[in-house]
Each structure stands twice: as structure tokens, then as C-alpha cells.
Amino acid sequence: MAKPITKEGYDNVKVKISELKTEFESLPEIIAEAREKGDLKENAEYHAARERQGLLQAQISKLESDLASCEIIDPSKLDKDTVTFGKRVKVKDKNTDAILEYKIVGEMEADISKNQITIITPIAKGLLTKKVGDTITIKVPAGDKVLEILEIGL
Image 1: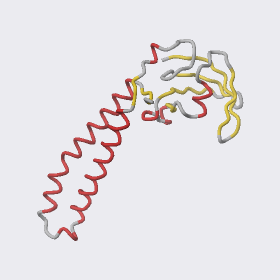
Image 2: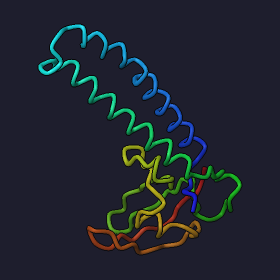
Image 3: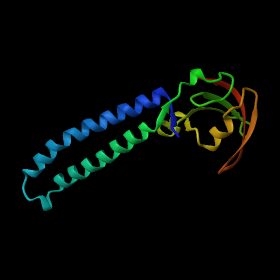
């Protein structure tokens, strides 16, 4: 089953892959320069560059593989009145009166510092298919979270 991703998330992962490939392509020159410095057994610069090369190759392969299993979903084509993948949701935490905003995204693009939560989190699962005005109770590790949906948008 394909994993959902927004076009923005897909593009961000492609940029990350490109950046990693650029760094990866610069490593043979660094390795060659380090090799010229003599005995490889005690050449920390050489070993660090080789280790970085392997790490970058693994990261590139993983990201490309993960991206290949994704399907780009356009949230603007989904029901505008319900919480769906790719939507921004403004909620009121009934326990604290705090106003919170989340964007429900795919696993590859989740970033809590930007309030982007993955579709598989308890909060996202609880919000999906709900409408403005709905109040839901979500079980989270810290206890029950009671949220009222105030706004749904892109």
C-alpha cells in the first residue's frame, strides 16, 4: 500500500536527496586527498570520509526507496468540510483552553516543530473525518485529550 505524501513534502524529500547526492559526489576527491597523506591505517581523515560515504549512500538509498512507495495526495481535491490528509486543523484543547493548529501529513514529512503530525499519530487518527464543531476525545500517552475542531483548511 502506498504511503500518502503531499506535493510539498515530496518536493522537500527530492531536494534533500539532491543535497545528499551532491555531498556524496564530493567525497571521492576528499578520499583521494586523504589517501595521498600516507599510511591509511592511521589516517583518520581517510576513514572519516569513507564512513561518511557509506552513511550518505545508505541515507540516499533509504529516502529513494521510501519515496518510491509514496503516493502524492492533493488535499485540495478531498472533502473540504472534513479533516483529511494534508489539511490544517485548528482546535481548542478543552482541558487547557489552548488553541492548537496541526497539519496532517505523511510519515516522511512530519515535523512537530512546524505542527506537522503524521497521519498515524493518535491525534491525527482522532481528527480524521471530523467536521468543524465536532468535539473528540483522544487517548494520548499523557491521558485523554479533549479537542473541539474550530477550523479546517489547506
